[in-house]
Image 1 (cartoon, rainbow, N blue to C red):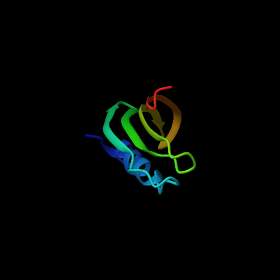
Image 2: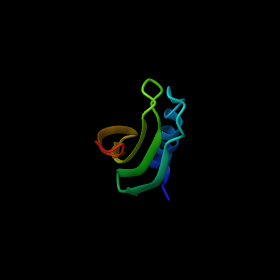
Image 3: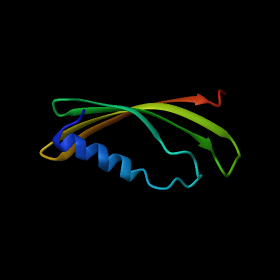
Image 4: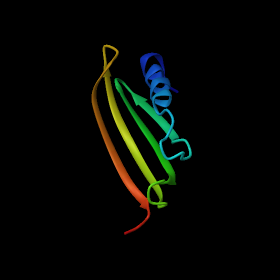
Length: 85
């Protein structure tokens, strides 16, 4: 469970996803893991690109470092699971 500012980061992150231009399913955040000033989010997303009709599925993780209420570092790791090329 997140506490304090990291809980605020989780809420802001989920809200920031907003509507998807391709009308895809919402992003699935499987876990938020926090330790000290660092939070790592594990998730996935899937849908269809309107322009091409191509289905896709990605799994990813994002690492945030928060200091004094500000994100000072962010890294994302993304793996396209489908389609396979």
